[in-house]
Image (cartoon, rainbow, N blue to C red; front, side, top):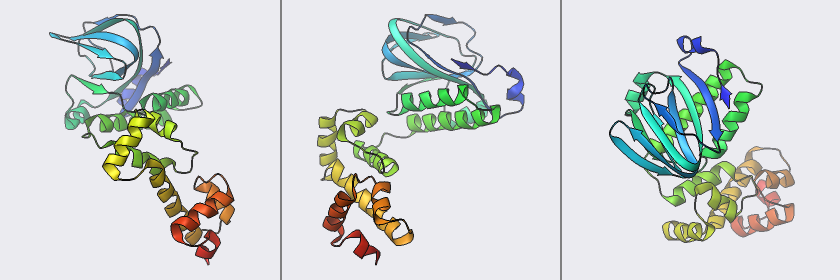
Length: 252
């Protein structure tokens, strides 16, 4: 677990990341006075029972809760694993976001990976300033994912393709990133978009390649690699199919 021990930093920084961690064997927790920081907590496995005053509910793997600092609460369960992030920031910001004393949420697809990156950054060669920046970005993106109305699966897929088109993406990897199995991914995407995921990935890659060919001096082979094509011959084949000429001819 990472913990920020400089407790006077909240008087200087508008945002302070106080702890980041996870627990494969979560112990029962009773906090009649609440916690001294705002708190994101979510379940990686198992089930937990949560209580806020008279409100009681269960959370399962893939669900979580945000808790404001100072809000009394308790939770317990058997064989459940959790991950968390705690921080200090203005209550006015939370009021502006419309966040109450606590809020349940579904875990976004990339949360555990981004949480691991934040943890590694925090325990590495970081500073209070860089941790404040990274933690603020993590927390605000999490709030945005939770509070923004749900978008169609195909839109989430397209956003992923636009960000990571240069990587060796497969249907299995894409499905894992958006939180469905590959068969549901293919059916849903076809229904919403009328085409396939890999057709859209190829379209994005070709569009990026055309831009690189037009505005950069990188070699044709380098452009193919930058756009995620496994070989120059495959790049040339797919480019000709889509554009009607070779990459070199297009550049001329």
